[in-house]
Image (cartoon, rainbow, N blue to C red; front, side, top):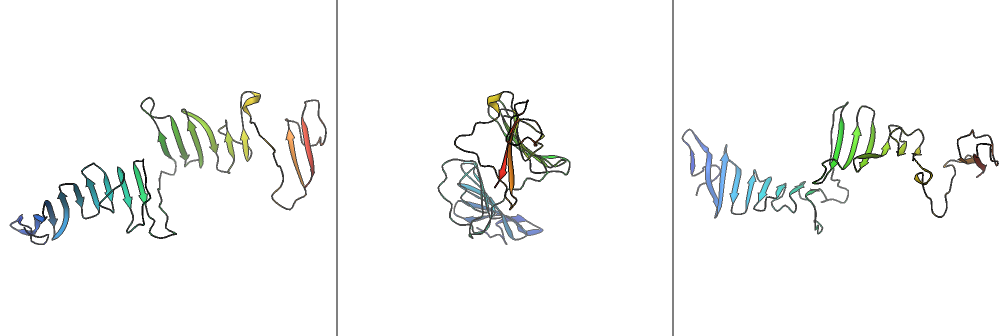
Length: 219
């Protein structure tokens, strides 16, 4: 009974705004002659773009959401079988399409993703600091990995001074490497070195009084 343009129940001075029966078991609400809200036995939708089904799942861009929140851009492609999860961002109608989750913070603020459980709301963390442009990762509520603005990576330190810094509190904390370690230069230069210890790099092929060893040679 009625249409979006001429709803069955409308205002006397605004006849294209009101309520109408869109179909069997489907109640529609229009404004300005355009359907804005639709209620059925199983779903609620706004402007045919925002849907809530009877299970409480929300779909944006589609009427049959697969997770608690399912966002789809346009006519996205097929959705693979997903057995668990709460959020889907889908944009795969073209092979080169990209689904992007953007987290935007202030220029002197932080952008974060928090991981928690019933015992602690902040067990894990991914944090980007916009003031100093570094990123840090936490597990068990402690900093574990930091990447600074120069691209240096630190494990066990929040201030890595070299391209890869590992800081521990005992000899077994620094690292275990199985099989081999290859050290060289990515350019056409002729010499690379590996140093074990803290002395200067001038004592090639020798062990110093500080038990430091430097291995160097042509590549």
